[in-house]
Image 1 (cartoon, rainbow, N blue to C red):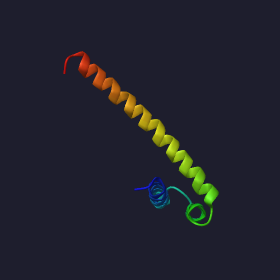
Image 2: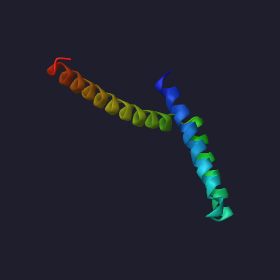
Image 3: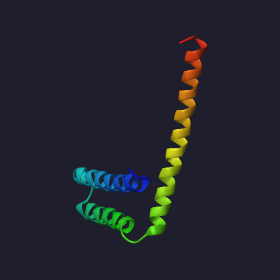
Image 4: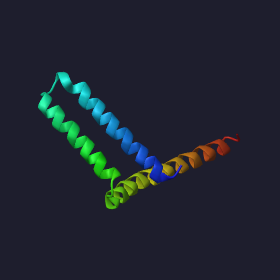
Length: 90
C-alpha cells in the first residue's frame, strides 16, 4: 500500500472519529454548535479530498516524517536488542 493511500485512509478515519466525538457530545454542548462543528469537519475533509494538492503534500510530508522517525527508532532498538543478545551469547 502506498503512503498516499495510507494517508487518505487515515484522514478518512480522522474525519469519522471527529464526527463520532461530535455526535457523542450532544448531551454536553448546544445543538447549534454541534451542527456548525459537523459542517467544519466535513468542509475540512472535503478540502483535503478535493483539488488541494498543496494540502495533500503537506499532510503527506508530516506523515512521512513521522514514519521515518519511528522507523529509525525501531531500527535502533532492534540493533540494541541484537547487540545485547550477542553480548550474552544468544
